Image (cartoon, rainbow, N blue to C red; front, side):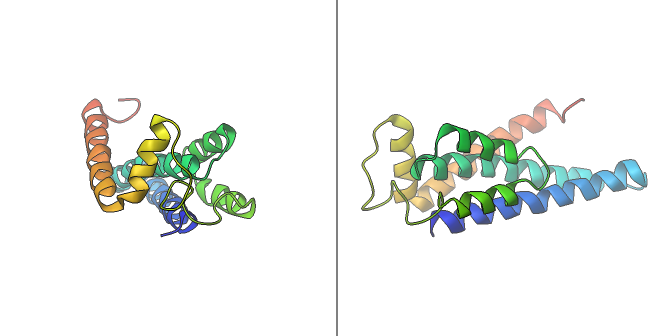
Length: 150
């Protein structure tokens, strides 16, 4: 999977889960019919949000994005539906073009973060499994802490 396809997948998923969460909030606060939409939409959105953060870091480090682009990618996840326009602008700038910069045949990693990203790109199934476990642990911790404002 190319960096462009990988990033697009998570950018679109993040936008879809924003729609789920906002729809749930309309049901809970607007119509006062149910809070089930917030529980489900909020949970799914939180999970995909964490995955998107990891995606921004992985793709950004591999493709040698400057810190400002990585920061904007992270901020785009906080603003409803902003991940898709960010992905479009980033793709048009050519920052998602080509193969993985730290992948096989790519440049040698120079620091611990690049080494971690290179390992993840070169061992995708193992990295995905470990990454999923990390997201589950963080997500569970956040559930224990409770929703914002509670």
